[in-house]
Image (tube, rainbow, N blue to C red; front, side, top):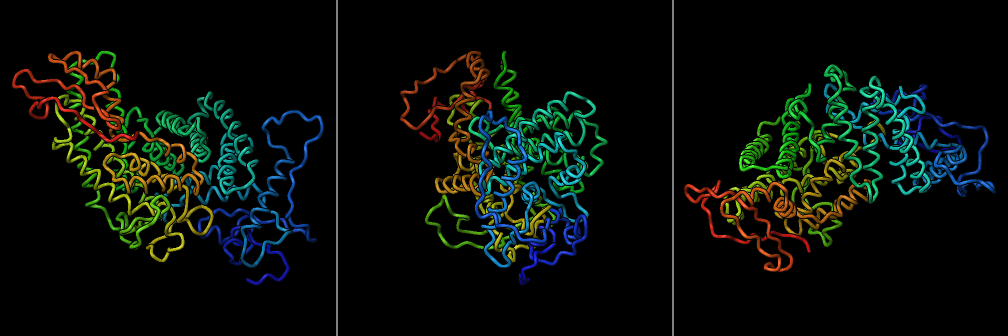
Length: 578
């Protein structure tokens, strides 16, 4: 397309894709046919105006008081000019952006946010995510909780691109207003369970993922927990609509990355999905969260009896059974759910922290939604294996658990899972952005023309990478590479939650075993045993190790503990960062 001095009247998306727009109002047919949200048309004047090459913020009047955090018209105009300047600097190919075209900041922010988070499902399926935002956005009234939360997320998403920090401050202003408006909406029962209110809470969680601070690195978790409570209070009939089912799936996937389990986890895995394979995979994910919280509850009893210790043994057996189901889940999957080797990397990276992929295969998928469900099952397997190790340490006080067959099986399973996860990571982090010919299918997002580099996929792989970074069963090379990928998610994709979550150096399961040993229930179980074992002093161990074996209950009939012969007291040393 040759620039002839006449500004184009096409929509912003067609101009960015360098295709001719049919200029249908209010939304062009190209965007509608490609299932993208049309961002609208520019306002073109008859005369050329000065390019925004020297943008200055409007000065404050003398005597003006402290800024109250609200967005004035002058601030909106200034931030809009900042966006135009940034967009002009990023365009390095012809045709150049004409100075008469003013892209509204709100439109640019909305399109950027939708292109990174809203995955459109293939026709005839519900394998999409956050698609419910599109119809709710069109109906949202200005000043409503949804409108304020959407503005906060959109501006926050755009500010991650290195624009003026004032845009992030404006996003924070909208976020504070959205919190107040949502709190007011939740006080009205008729409004609290509506689709718009539930979607607003999810938007607040996305804002925390993008703009987390040192004090609120896990602030998104509280919003996810709140959305779960709202979902529990809603009628099942609301799942019959596309928006209702979309909200259900989004909350379910968000729950699986957190630490809070729903009050009744069974029905969370039995939604009316069109994909039966996803039902099984997501249900296994809910069970991993449920068992983890059940074990934590058993270790925090006010009056723990020996009968409660038997529940720990039963929980371990359930975790082993679910781990076997996770292992067998991929065996009967259809072709569209299976990963495939899309490329092979032979070069050994000089810097593991900056390597996009490790030597070996690079796997591809038929879409981010399918990849996300597979990721949920792998993460559930890791949780089940860690639960098995924790239960072993609770039940065996005088036995080195590292020589038990259950421990060896769990450690080998974790090592196998790490080798399966590493080839999939490049798919989630945009490695195929410039290698789309290697993929059999490309995802479709609500805005933009290349969805291979999106925040949705980056967030879904963030927690498995954090787990690998802090996993005792991973090698030093695997941990260094996973740590670099977590930093990449935080800085390249702008998900600040990854930056603060990646700063944790608590090793798993070592740190958990030490905490379990000092738990309220474990201390009571040790006091109730007939032959209590003296706790060794920490000075008996070399620096960099920790004693994490827990007191078990000896069997007075045959000298055996619950899972094997009672060996001599053995010091258990596990890896821990110093």
